[in-house]
Image 1: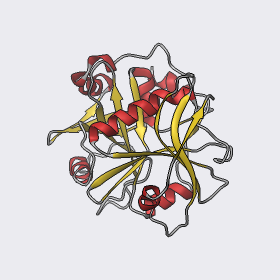
Image 2 (image 1 turned 45 degrees about the horizontal axis):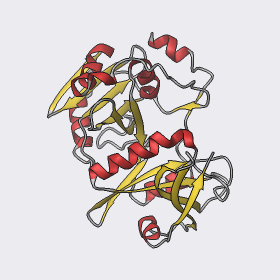
Image 3 (image 1 turned 180 degrees about the horizontal axis):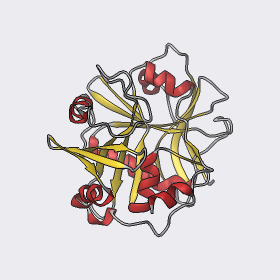
Image 4 (image 1 turned 90 degrees about the horizontal axis):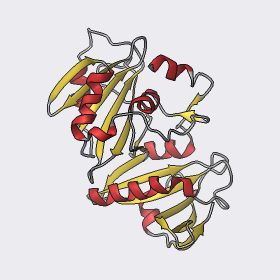
Length: 276
């Protein structure tokens, strides 16, 4: 079943998350999804990290840290030590860490409550999700076509095995004892004219709820590859009376040396509505 799924996306490109803005965030000490992790004493071990959060029939969110290894599983590597070391540096609470070796026959590992289990198959891996909420398991009836790009192996795998709400976390940092969460949009048009789409309403609402549960700050940011330094900030997204989106927003110009968190804090936002 998984091989069929992968065959269906051969013509679909993998999402490239490295650009002028994500490079800026990484350089400023933000955690950025899709970036390569540097592992001490393992310079040739290529691992990319993501965070994803899920919600089905419970009020709580399931949050997992995902590590995707580029090479096949290697019995000579102490993966438990590697994963434990990486998890110890996280500033977000997680339910467990999921390791993935997608090359060849896909294999999984789970680090949870100080215990590591590896060489797991699909069913064994899904049991960790089911233990949180059984309603997360099962293919969605309203699966959108994958016609633009895919994020990572887990993105493809989850489409075959999981349902309910799920999304990845783009970026965050800790500053002044507060966690600042960023939701990133990268439209092809100018951010001066771009507005958020109603189709993404659930993503905005769910992420806002998650950050409230975390007692963290949230800002949505739209930027264009063709407009370095120009950002559209928007926050407090909700459904308007007309059925569109209502939020507060403003455009800012950012220099490479600027402190983004400080810049956001000092920017006044104004009401705007989108009916896209």
